[in-house]
Image (cartoon, rainbow, N blue to C red; front, top):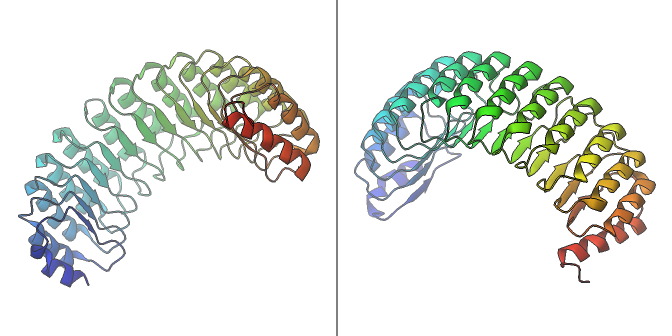
Length: 382
């Protein structure tokens, strides 16, 4: 199949996209592919994810990058690139002037490979999206990437999820973010940032004026880390989405975040799924909802919020004019709490989505809430 595609490549002079994922392409097949596209002037996207391309195949692809004048996206997820292959691709990036997206997720790339890529990025002026999730970059690799972020003027998205990055690595990224004015999305989910690392990133938020999305899902962040992030939010004017799901934030941490939101006028989306927030934490968040005019999405599913917490959130909804989505899936709201939310919706005209499944709520009150939400979606008309 692959060899036939390569052999017939010259018969497709206007081909712009080539999908070859989930085949058994190795280094030899990668060489044949590169030979076939060497003089192509139309191809803009190549997807070679989930194959068997190793360092040698990466070298062939890097050579293609140095000569390509059209390719903008190269997807090499789930191959066997490793550090040596990353070095070859970094060399290709030095001279390439068209590639904007490079996906290297799940490729056994460690700190040395991250160093090579960082060196390549110092000379590259076009790459805007770099995906390095599920590798083994660690704190040392984060240091190299943090250094390059201080000077890079093109990257807008970098994914470093699942990379064994801890507080030290977060500190290096903090240094990069303080000086960076371009990066808008940083994905650090499933690392080991912890409370100390959260403090470093919060410090960066107080100085950074570009980042709009920060993903810190599954990072062992507790109440202290939430306090640091709340401090960062107080003076930040650009971050609009913060992911803190699957951490260890309890009622105290929820209070800190609520306090941070009182002075924040930028954040629109806050994810707190699967933390340890109960009724007291819901009280603090409900209080801030009474005054906050920017938050549009609040996810609190899979926490420990009961009927009392639902009452506090309902009090917030009565006066809130901004929130459109509230996710309370899989809490302990029960029928009493749902009734409080329904009562609040009589006075709320903006909430259009409310998730209450897995809360022990009967069909009758669910129907009442659905009618209020339908009214809001229809602009007050039923």
